[in-house]
Image (cartoon, rainbow, N blue to C red; front, side, top):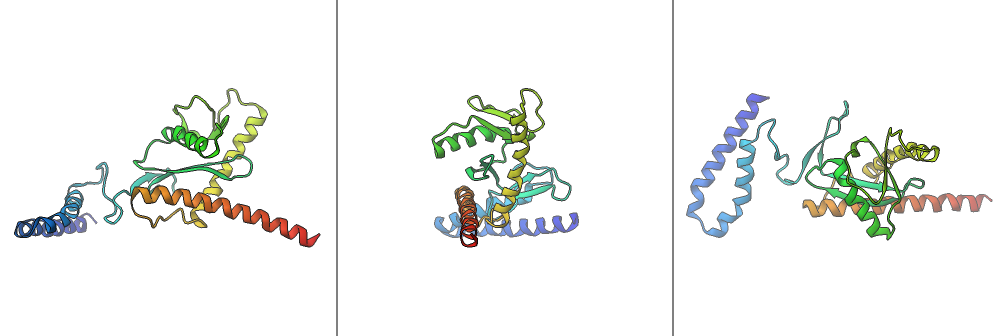
Amino acid sequence: MKKMNNKLKSRLGRVKRDIERQLPNYSVDIQSLFEVALKQAQKLIEQEQHSKNKLYSLHAPEVECISKGKAHKPYEFGVKASIAVTNKEGFVIGAQSCPGNPYDGHTLLPQLEQIKQFTAVQPEQCFVDRGYRGHEVKDTKVFISGQKRGVTRSIKKALKRRSAIEPEIGHMKNDGRLDRCYLKGTVGDAINVVMVAAGHNLRKILNKLRLLWLKIISG
């Protein structure tokens, strides 16, 4: 693999140097067309296994490597998304993309601000997993999975309910196509997350109406 990787890099370097030699013979407009491609080629040549801010995709340079910490899927390639759902019904009330692969705890405050913007209500409590330690939230009580101090019976029940967000995200990935974004750039990623969340809520509402209709016609 290393041998083939070095071979491909050497070939890319030859093509890049050949283009750079011939570009001065053309107009400025044509030279500007190759500017981005030459920068990407140089980045591909220079990056190594442990380099930071690596280029993973030419058609989507904003793609990042996200560590999942799971044996069957250690990494995912894309952009991190933050999803907030109601604790009982599972309706999505906040969804946003997080470019730059930030720490989970740093995404909690912007997510709560988005919820307040969408619903005009400041959440009193939120329940998160252990990845959100070190957050900077003050206006909302944050309960972390596995927390013992200050946890009543009702809060403990709500913390158990927190794990229900995982299948909701799974449905959004499989049914709502959250796993693959076809819109371009970071703006496209942000639009895609919000549209997927809206579609997920609509599917839940339609399912509720379908069950209600079955009860009406069966009664």
